[in-house]
Length: 220
Length: 247
Image (cartoon, rainbow over all chains, first blue to last red; front, side, top):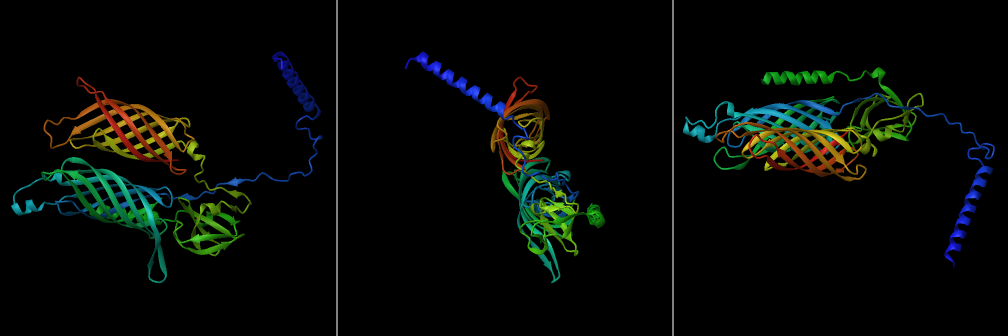
């Protein structure tokens, strides 16, 4: 077909379409109630939504006391503070700070007068941030009448340990038992390993510093 | 010191044992589900020990994550999941709304806080990062980093901008730009130790992925230029991975 004729036919037909739609629109104006009578009158009130005021308690803070075995330096008492935020029933983030005073190595004890570290260098302080997973929720039964909700959790984190005058990057792996004594007070029994590299005694090695602690925290 | 700690523990106990809300003004709701399941603890792993039928009233006492402690008319107390309480009405017939994470919160959240670990030019790092969303894709951010190396330790504080290209995607690439201050102190066992504090600038790129409606996993590479007072500037690569909570 001739190209000119083809274009002419196409433009004519599109013009006709446009005109037709104009006419149709004029005949039935949009939103005209008389054209489409309402069969049923809706009788729905706008529903109010209310957000109740409830005390949300996702933060947990408290203190712990325990014993830590500092590799090569004996075991000592340790104490500190911990705070946690519970994201959901499974996961929480936890920050811990603590301190201990390292003892003497067996070499120091046997040789008598040798002191590897000064008194201030024996200060063992640590902080870490970890993520915990409530892996075993359950209940602890005290006799036949009383049960307390409990949870066994695993945690993994990183932090820093200041020992012998130096900061050391520390990895944390731990597990604990949280017992809800009341709705807002929890007792903790925790075991964790604080691992950091140290070359204090000549060769570089990864030291394992195991800690066992008892703690008390409050939810708020 | 031990005495101090014990008294702190006692104080916590005393503070926490004060009733959080007086029972009289606890909010009441009417159950609309066929029944409401009471659990012994705030989690799906705790057993259901009691149910309340439709039409009964319960008082809302406290909330922990997505679980709400309620008391029935008969004085039984237990933990109920938020999703069950969303289908309750107040005594006046109003719908109850208990805020929880929705998929929209991925784009609409404002604040993020994260824990990050990684490698900074051979040193291990522990970092806390926080950011504020200026728009859905542009975030103002602040990082405080503890550098823990074999020969030196340090602290670094940086501020900058982060631009996520496709924040609506489940995994979104981003670029970052910023600057701050690095303080390096060589370890005590090394001779001629001298602390240095230098300004630094960085540019970086990475990936952010939504784990849930509240969590992000973020991996990032940043190239730092430390503007030292010596003849040459120092270029340092940083690789990190961390998770971020947003609210």
